[in-house]
Length: 321
Length: 250
Image 1 (cartoon, each protein chain N blue to C red):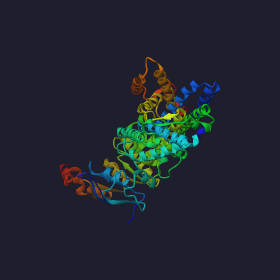
Image 2: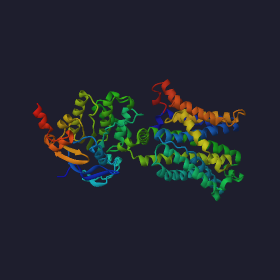
Image 3: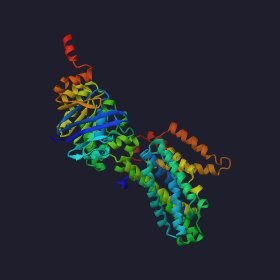
Image 4: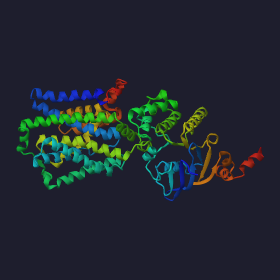
């Protein structure tokens, strides 16, 4: 059972701290820092389901986040629906889109699949940039009234923050639940050798489509919440290709295929990134660092931080998934 | 006569090359059927057609009375046919136990994770890999990898097992051990269709033998009949009267 797993409780404690730390001093700037960390963890954890568990590299993972942001924002502001409902519907819609994309592009393998995921990102971005109801390239803005149902802007932002933390915790728990399940075993078999997995009885076509769709759900929900909190969305920030690539760096840094590794990589990389972005001398230098980091990790520590930790403490991989 | 496996006139082309041409044979329940032939005769292609890796160009395949022609491999396993690969395909990043657990989980009975681990452990004990259960599949020797292939297939609890050259690359002791294992598999009620180059082994193990040459069926029958068939001798050694000539030399 998942409740007996230490990582489950670790996740809950971590999420509790993330909520308690900024709330207890009403520290808005800490909250803004931590929400980015949480988003990074959501993206890295869900990307891990594809790259780490199934062995399919998704370069366009950010499309789920951006599309979720659009659908959520549209429902919550233009239609005036409840925030949680809008975010959930955004998740469902984007998952269904992913299922349809997936059935098409998951026939491809290796580099061809990776290229197709970039294609999907570009296609969706172009489509949204020309979509009238979503404001074309200028995007959507949240009017101040939209925060009223949640008791004004100040309170609404805190609610959005807490919801993002919940999505972060759910991402980690989902990763754990899949990892210790039969479904997860099937995915790992596909990752190791898809042809052998099929001969052993794994329905790879269905498994891949499901995991691709599942990996879209929580990022889409997080996108809806995050862009609602930011108050605006436009195609260039919703579908930022660089963020998609950085998701891969996060995952490799922490250690792909593990629940804690993905979260650790997401959190650490985001802290490093915001430090570099705000430091006057190193502004925009973060991508150079990201590239270098990726190179070093791939060459010298393919298991990432968590792989290094496993080597330090043999046997720990059975406890820290 | 109706058999457990009925292969009727199957043909497979790769571009202009006819890899398997109009092959028909039957395998009865409880039988060990040997499939032999020179390199490139189409033996592995035939396996790939039976378990659904390749689509047929012509012909039908029935298993236990059901039409399994062109069913995908994962469905064929559920129906009760498991196979091993000539070039072993362990899931390298996983442990030996996890490898076999995959076989049990997604095999004929589609077991849940916990009972699968139990079945996997039993099978590993049976093939003599019990003490390696928690090793990485990468760390196994070739002989152990072959046993892992067999274990994974057995964990699916098949009615029919397809063995693709499980003896190749083994030393005499290991061959002896594997022959014993194949016998015990048959004795436990699983029918076996096996490709093998090691003539001595296939002669002692098989109830019947099907010989393929250049994609077509050349001969079929009891081991002793088949090896004395002049056509078979020709296919293997070049000309039919070589046996007599060799005797003459003696």
